[in-house]
Image (cartoon, rainbow over all chains, first blue to last red):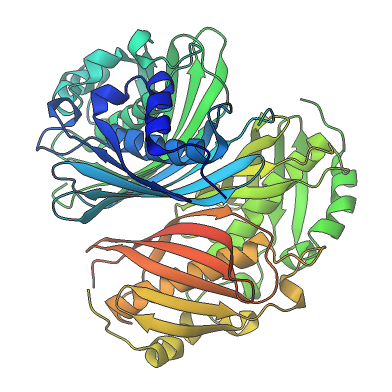
Length: 139
Length: 139
Length: 139
Length: 139
């Protein structure tokens, strides 16, 4: 495993594939071999009644963070596709979020990631996910 | 199992809990004991490059449809919470979507649903999910 | 989608890949395009205290049934590998079991199945699973 | 979170709930607040053609390790039940296995665990799972 893109290159590239990323206020906070941290500024539109961040918003953050760590390792030529995402909602989120995604596997055809989402201020685990990506043969 | 709310009552209620439902153009197409059909008008903001509906959008539809079928059976007093959602992306979606959600289990504490998402025009399966909801004791 | 093997051919072949199948008393009850039914005679060794069939036993039945339906469609040359299996345990099982597995997707690289496990006598849903198989390129 | 049983007490108790544990050669290698390590001696009966440990065997190890960590924290009065287990098979296993299970959540009604299974000699990740347990109200 080695990085083929740095954080800046990844961020520049994702504007194309995740154009909604701006709405979400996602930002890469750290990137190293096999690991990425992506933060999310929570604004009104992501909230449910009671001030909770919605499940779909956390799904989006999990999917984005794991997509980015795969991308950073396979380069921007390839177009990986999410084939499976399993998410457990652990606790009521509160405030801005941070997702730590780890590459569990980077095969020729499949990549598997594990993602922990925490409340930034309280360092509380709010959701945990695993995701699988299919990597196109053109790689 | 029996319905405690009809489609109109469910739709009126979800404007509160899923306020973003209007942005998504979700609409209940059918509701009977243990089953619901929810359609979604796909507009530009849900699309990825290449015209694909984004994964988070399909997650939202799956979560919404299964939430609504649980709601219709437990009534609007209860506030069910998604605890787990597992989604497999099957084929590239195309055009408006329809989600068929079935209740696999309606226990005192947990409800489990299965959701199939299809392209409305082609009747093609594009995603399949299972979701678990925790039902509060106040029920 | 079309069948490349019939039930007899599949059963003959699985003795090699699922040698433990005899211990489990698995038997193909029906096979058609996209669908299979596999029954399981429950004996003492699969039971937990209280007479419940163990989770691992139901996992084995789910994995076996979905493996067999994939096998019947790709032929015995290929050696598919389980990459993901997600199982929800719905109700306490009682007596012999029957698993109905459906092919949700049969792609060049991945097959996705949905499996329902029922108590044979009561026709009660006891578990529900989805499974993904990686299909080798040599296919 | 605190431990209500030590490794010896847990091992003594599981002979009742996991009687098949002896066949599997499971052994607790370490137990602390929120974490457990369980090893498994791989013998012929767990192998598939090619020398691979079977999927059901890894499911059993994942389920057992996470069940034990929940048990150690809720005490032997309670009878937790697996409600969901999602497993990703990462690499071909080789030789004896070790499972590290972590408690992600220990609520009044639900516990969520994350499990990594490694080949003991090569320290290679071979499978990764998450599991949810329902904790009975009698707790």
